[in-house]
Image (cartoon, rainbow, N blue to C red; front, side, top):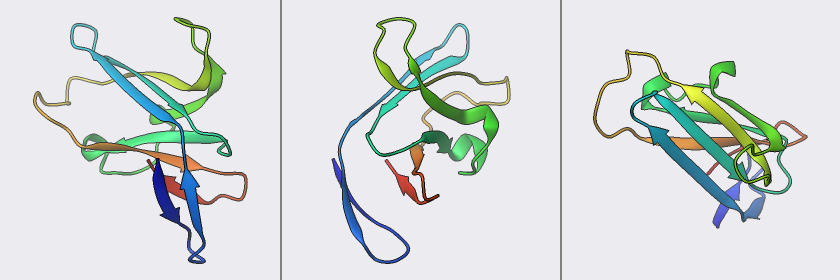
Length: 102
């Protein structure tokens, strides 16, 4: 749960969950975000210069593993991703185009 404010200095409480699991062998990261009131999300981080990209877009769908409805994507990282620790966040987008970091 986080407290976020938009460009008009309105505050909003965001509740939900996020999940990121990386399969080292395949280089695929399963990303899940479940936050009501948002249309989609992007995975952003130091690996993509903290910029939105269609390659890192999460959309609402049923998860093939557990059937839960969430914003989900299986993201394949290329060989340029270095080993080690990386910083990331989920950038949430609502119907009005407002963005919030989770």
